[in-house]
Length: 441
Image (cartoon, rainbow, N blue to C red; front, side, top):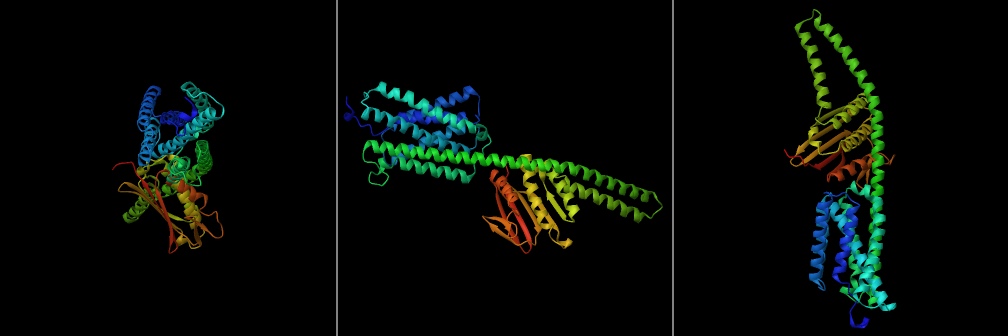
């Protein structure tokens, strides 16, 4: 049998099945697994058998059947990550796309080198040579992929994929796949090859470009998450320092209230009218109710933030009212609650404190459950000249106003698949947030 007796222009489907499987194993290895070793191994073996059988049965199909089979294969890869990896569906789709393109490149590269060896280096065309190429190329290729990807293992475990990131990765993957298979679908295009060697080269280079773009994008996401984590830690450190100051102020405030209460008790013991006694008792009761209403919402993280911000408002002559059911935030991490409401109230206080008229230094905060959403609404009087850049508010005098704080708010809202709206109407700055709530009522 000679080279010219066999059509080597198409890579056998079983080669792709093996490449997809090894690619999936590598990417699952750099992510947190849902189960222990043996259940994960069982799922992996089932995945290998299923994808190999399907690709053997559909090997050689073209046109619409080829497109459908590719969608089924991608669905298998997605299902594997969703079943074996500890990740949601967005993250599963993200790594399924990366797995798919890396598998495409591995199969394409191995078969191109095999084709080159047969065609240009006079290697014998037999199964032994074919298997030898597989046993050499795949271990080297996937070892390199694993060495590169394991650097991001810790970042992968904390990775949260947004809609924007998922769309970008999907577009890169789809474009790469279309370019790499253009020569098989339509031969007369600027991106199609005429000979077998050109087809293999274009396919491998397209897959290589896709792998490189997806890796670069993944690196950018991980670096962004590291920066955000540092920002969070810096914010928490700042809040921790503020808590020490808050403790001292709280002790002073309690001492002051205790001193006032002693005088009120003395007056109650004195020979005063019943009406005067009732008036003093009403004042004491109102102060207690005011404290409980603002600082006991049912969520410790939110209570801590409200206490700190309430004292800050008192020192600046700002009136802050709050009606919040903190129990509805139990699905959020305490650090996210602290950063979210810390930034929200810091921005509101910053804008309100600039108002000269003390009667207009007002902040209203409400938090409640509305059907299956947590509704957060914050309003504050504002006299700044505010404009919007990329959907976020800023002032003409200082572009940093509501800059980092609003971006932090936006990132946390997106983390919980929520939505945010900001507007300025008749001297009032209004921020509305809707968060999907997993807590059933």
